[in-house]
Length: 106
Image (cartoon, helix red, strand yellow):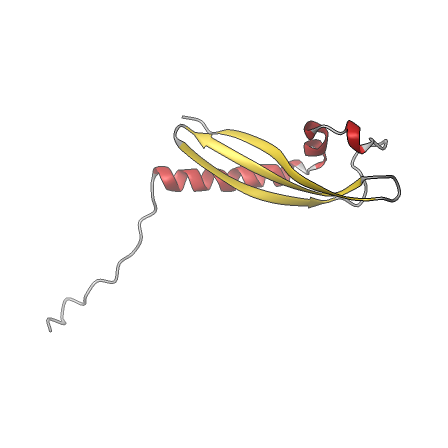
């Protein structure tokens, strides 16, 4: 089964200049679901300025707009990490064990 990924904004931090509620930081989460397996990871993006050419008032922002400000590579890297977690759940990694030495019989 293929993994379905969802990105959501968890919280945002603002300053009051140069405009009221100017977004400077977004905390986001990537969730992956593959059948009965679910994994997630959070990310943090700091903005030097809002990523749009024009200022968008805080009360007019949508989750999709803020997600579009996050560099695509950050989301793709997070999806890869989540996929790795799910793959480890589906096929757990083999852990080495401390095996007694064959020549020590005591």
